[in-house]
Image: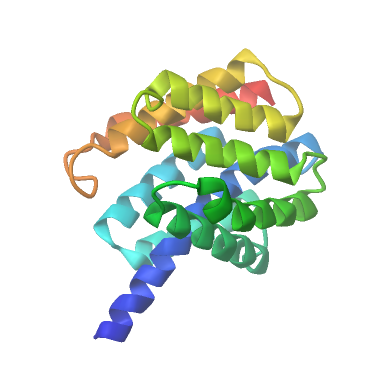
Length: 213
């Protein structure tokens, strides 16, 4: 029983970061003539994965990840696994850290972005992308820096690094996603969260991101 429980949470530890990276990668592939992404489907899938994560539903979480990979023709399962394991390591180290986040979480995060760059052929700087990613993680955890506007701006800065420019649509996308995440975190383990409204915000966020790309 203990081994089954450990296996379940090992999967959950890397599944959510994989999904978040895939969403960013689809946009990068658009820039280089790869298949476009459906903003509504991405928002729906992210909402379902958040719900599955909080409910501990490993099967549904896995199915959503597979659907994302297949429907968007993005990363292979092997690429996703490599990236996911690095992100899992980074996020778990960040979760347990009380400071010195760059030393603790940045190395694995930077390696993950190197793999993303290799998979997409995009010309972004992996180290800058990793630092921008970590910056909004830190902002969400830091009182006085954790408002939707502040976190949204950090997410927009990540998009600017990934796509090589800043634009108002990226800020709008970041703000909406930060608001969705804040709403998601209400209650204990997602209980009481307004999932319909969360999906609405994510749909708007990814339409804005698509517009900016």
